[in-house]
Image (spheres, rainbow, N blue to C red):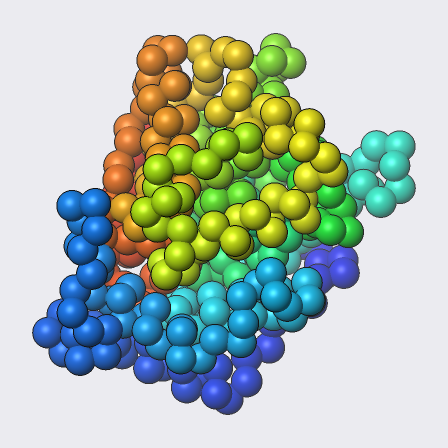
Length: 364
């Protein structure tokens, strides 16, 4: 099962990238007063105060900006995201196993014969562990297993479980509903081949951030509707849940906090085929008619995030339908804090809290 990743091009950081990462990692341990020299006066909005590490980071990003994603070519935007994620990834966490692999999904469509993924495990051996099938963020257009490598290492190490990070196909080369179909097929493969993969078949979670959390939510809805075994838990970081409307958090945080309204407009327009797709629950899981019977969930939102309100609305919909849900708004954080494990203590704390919720949900 461990073979080179088909078609995957690993990101190769330059010397300036490495120096920037070292500086960001060092800044992650500095006290707030010193960070204020870089970030300036604390930003306050909607009764919240922006984390000084993220405020300083946003200042640095603005100085080094290569342009907004929507103003670049897709290839340029992908490179910029990989570089940005690398610079805040911190010191690499060592694990017993980090292995590229192929999920042989089969099917009649020849380009669905396999799907690249990466396995993270705190143990090297035959021990059966719980697993998190993880879908990276990036607006269904950007991102990769590399951009979220630090996040997955952190979750595997702190959670004592395996993580399988899925390199699903991206738009515009593959538009909606390809990413949703890939995510569903990847979960089904892990579920149906748990013994071979060395994972506990009773403890299979799905999760992701932003677009990846969207895909994880869709996997739960789709498996429930098909009457088959669902994931045992869903871990949703800053989920995108509704392409049909914009909320108050877009008005408050749609500019100046990393993810912008224009970014989201571009992501969605690149991913979907027509406006009718916006009403499809596979694109907008908040629009599903039924929220009952879904797996237990932990939903973590960022206070300074345009997606904050729709993520919290999704958590409330599940809770109102009787689904066990823990909802946590990290008031001082931006979108997507899960990548910044090397640059922000509060980002690490938020990840650790979510992992703890998942451990409780999976009962291990």
